[in-house]
Structures are given as structure tokens and as C-alpha cells.
Length: 468
Image 1 (cartoon, one colour):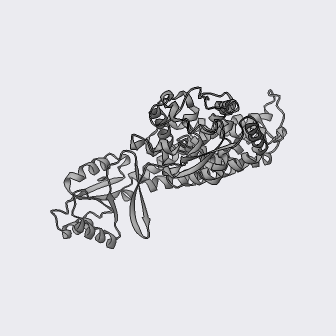
Image 2 (cartoon, rainbow, N blue to C red):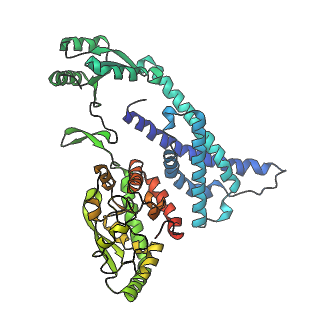
Image 3 (cartoon, rainbow, N blue to C red):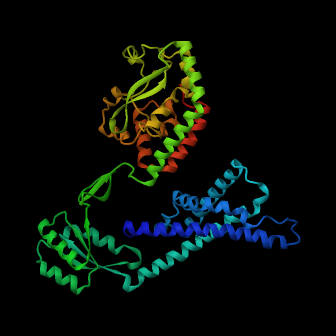
């Protein structure tokens, strides 16, 4: 247990180190196969190409190795896991890395004579053992550093006694004795000179201010004293209780801010998500341009114009945008919706009808194959939608939300596919379950989750699971 910024520094250091260790493990595996195995005369195994044929793999391993280890939770185990958990997590991560390399070899047709299956098989145990050894040694060194008296931080708790009990308990429970609580000061009853004396007598490194029941002018003066003496000050912000929003510290125009956020924060992962949206939507529009023209012609021939159905939908935070689809219903579908309200199979504000009489013959096929959604790639390219995200609902449906917590599904950009799409789609008739899946996606979002949903969407579309 340590400050988040300290954890991130350790993680970044370990990621760089692990990238080079994975490269070393590949070289060692090749060396064993290249030099030692052919020497065993009872194994009739021919020699393989030198390591120069594997250099291209290092270019992939350096970024992919730490990324896969992080996504599999390898670095989170540093604080709470056992060595067996680390072993199995490292083994799983290395196996995934080898699979990605194998896919790359097949897709890009890397000459087979330069590869050795035995070397790649050896790479799995060698890399796993190397990562586990690094894990044991690094945290042994960290824990030894923590136990050193010169590295222990002397803590002074400052605030009302009723607010300090939790802090005192948490600091005592930190393993390794990294923190030493030297005492408490209640600035509501004790004068500032006494506070200054405690700072000097106990050689304090850090003062923790718990300010829920504190006198703010006095706290401000004590904070200025810490600033003048170069003593680090922590101000507890746990007097704001939230169940979902995560607190983060930031600043605006030099003003310190405590930000509570229940959606993914700005990060390289989010930037990569938007770049992936733009690149893949542009690529798919280029590839599918001619098939989309043919589909548009079929719609025009069978049911007339308009070919594209444009509807105002709720985007991020409910901002309206125009979403495009190939028209699958009669041109008067919106006007006859109220007549079919009694046949609605969905609970809540969403409107869906089994065997909807408004659907045209070509529209039924387009819906079954999900081809009617292809024009939304234009919405993705424009930035109004994402490839993955909660499905956008019509404005009249979002205006009828009965529970304000349901609006949190609109706190991210809507998408072409989502957990709802791959978890049953139209088979799910309970709107609360639909919202639950959307919020589960938001609360657990990662780039890796987006990739998994995209991959899982392919068989769902091909085999038409849940499509109507």
C-alpha cells in the first residue's frame, strides 16, 4: 500500500524492465535451441537460422509484452498476490504473446525457414520463469528498503480526534512498516506553536490533515507552515462520500481541483480508441463502399425512396445527433408507432415489436444480417459514435427514462456494438438488464474490452444471434 503516484512509478519501471527481459528470454530460448539442442546427437534435429532472423519479433515484444501483462493484471499482484498467482498470470500472458506472434507470422507470411517452433515453445517457460524471478527479486528489494529506518516516513496526524482513528488504523496496517505514526494534533484545541514543536521534535516527513470537523483558517495556517518548512502535506478528501465516482486531483488555471468522475478518464487508451474508431470506420467505408451502393439500390428497387433512414438519437450526455441506417420499414413507420404501442415487448421506455408489420421484406433481411447498420460507420467517422459503446436511443425514449441513473449510459459515446449486442440483443426484453450491461461496460472499460467486444460481435452477426 502506497501513494498512487509511487505505484505508477514502480509499474512504469517494471514495464520497461519486463520488456527487455522478454527480449532476453527470446534470445535465450533461441540460443538453447541454436547451440545446445543440435549438440545432442540422439535428437536428429537440424540447425536453425541465427538470431538475426528474430529481430523483427523484438519490435513487437517490447510494446506488446508489458501491455498484455498489464491487461492480465500482472502488475496489480505486486501488492496483494502470491507468487503462484504471479506465476499463472505470467504464464497466461506469455502464452497470449506467443499466440499474437504466431498470428503475425501466418498473416504476414514470414518465411518458415527463419522460425523455430521449438524456440517459441521454449520461450514460454523461459519467459515465465524470468518474469517470476524479476518479481521475487524486485519486491524483495522494495520490502528491504521499506524496513530500513532511514526510509521510514514519520507521520503526524492533524485534525479532530474523531476523524483520525481511521487514518491511524490504516497506517498501522501498511505492511513493511513504511510509515511511523508519531502522534496526533487536534488544531481545534492545541495552539499552532505546539504543532510546530511536534514537527521539529519528531522530525516529521508528512503531515496528514483530516479536515471534516476542522477549523479551516487554522488548517490553512498549518498548511503554510508545512510549505515553509518543506514538509509534505496530505489533505484527506474522504469527507465526500461517493459510491461510483472516483476522486482525482487536478488543476484549472492554477486552482487545485478535486474531481469526481464515474466515466473513463482522459488517457492514451481513450486516444487510441478514437484513433481506432477513425481508422477502422474509414477502412470499412472504403472496402464496403460498393456493397453499400448495391444495398442502397436493392432498397430503392423494392421499397422506393428514401434509401437511408435518418433519425435523431441521443449521443454523449444526451446531445442529439442524426443517426443513419438503411431504411428497413415502410415510409410511414414513425406515424404508425403509437398504433402498435400495445404490442411492445420491451419494458421501460424502449419500443420494440416482434414481427413488426412495418418492416419491409428487404428490411427483414437487412436486420437479420445487421447490414442495415453499415451507414453508421459515417457517424463513427464523424465522431458522433464509436465502434463500441451503448446503443444510441431515439430522443423520445431517453426523455421517458423513469430512473435518472439510467442516463449514465449516455455518459460515453454511443456505439455500433456493445455488451447488449453480444449478450442476447433482441432476446433481452428487460430494459433494466440492458442498462445494467451498458453500465457494466462503462465501469470496466478498457481498450482490451473494446477489442474483445468487437471480436465477439463477428460470430454474433454471422450466426445472427438475437437478431430479429
